Length: 282
Image (cartoon, rainbow, N blue to C red; front, side):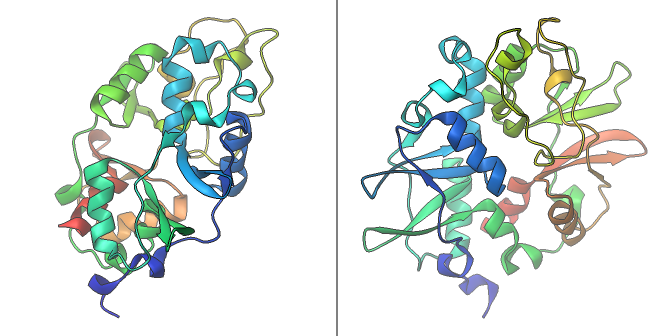
């Protein structure tokens, strides 16, 4: 079958992981960790009512003061979920879904067949398809400029910048060298409460972040959270002259969605999963 003829039914994951709007955010987040997924569907009485992503959790937990004062095991999913999500049918062409991901700035859509949820198709599913693995060209042709912050920038600055620019952040040291990377995953699984004496306990997931290793740890009550506390380090890097098939294979083998592009030990850009999907959607 030609790659251009691939349909959602050929890519989607099924069955789906779902929660109730009355379940807690902590429960939904633990589902994401356990099954290595980035989103869960929200079902109420057998009906699809919403979708909850790591991005939803990360931004709301870290930016809204009212939520930062409440532990995730006391927040219902319905407060954070995106209601009435975009859906597609199983016969929708995968190439069209790639364009939908980019235009709506979403990472996955439920697949609905005759009113019933049949599965879900995500950017991760698309990245495994022949539409992506058959791409040609070099990293430098698809990469974009990297948005950077110092490892000493505050949590509020990091969140505001990520929301404003809708971008991942590369964290740099004082000498300009790459220290780490911050994505929505880092925001979703970082609890300021666990840094405080008497705060709600949360067991940090191991091995499911963007890259192995985490940033500098702080002791409870030792000071404000900084980019260095949030970041994942070390980063996975690639050269600008590397081929896109090599970059895709590297993303898959390292289980990451972003590669920091470095030339002669100097940061020159970032290659995101979206940059590759953009090539597919053309």
